[in-house]
Length: 281
Image 1 (cartoon, rainbow, N blue to C red):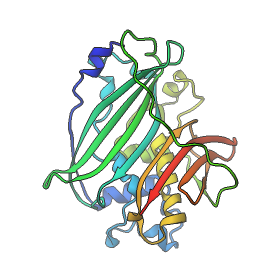
Image 2: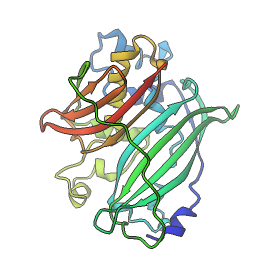
Image 3: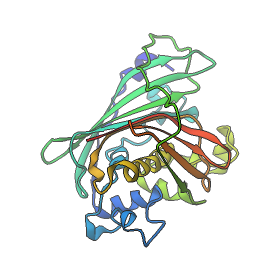
Image 4: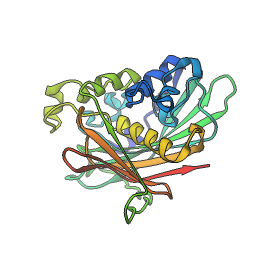
């Protein structure tokens, strides 16, 4: 990896027009609607009711696509993984409109040739018509093949402490065998989530679930536990991805009253999200 080339790469602005059915598709792709008799779930999948918007929907709006695959970035795009995700909402996400996502590189941290490099990104999501800021999304990618580069290294930001004691609330969400195939329809077409051969080359036995799908599952679990009938009460959320989920596994989200949370894949008893933190109004 060439540090100057990556830092100087201009990530294209992404404009996207979306409607209520796009919000419904996102909700379905993160496991909502599994119980068609549950009014709380139905608010997110019934376009006649808005629909209700899951706050993590902002993570798939105005996304610039797989820009790191551009050879001019000099990154080994076949070996990157999603390490952290977060968002801060400034206003309610509309159920329809045109938005622009502007993504920028914030920092790069060199972990060494054997451990890779951390790439820190921020995306501002704005309404095109008014220019109003809807949300700022944060994303950290682990560039597993690009550590030990020739260039300066930044400093990792502080992360929340791991929660102590028993959780105040827990929720279990069973993912479906085809969950990754459904989540891909939000625009993340990385073959790691589709092609068994690509997954094997990346070190996984089979295609894995998108980390952002697991993040969305945790988001709606937090909404149900602490936001009641007001999905807009969740203002920010962040977490680290510590292990993948395989489609068909059950995700258990453990939540604490102060906003801390983590998640694990029940069948393997493996923590998949850690150091999570959510803030509510």
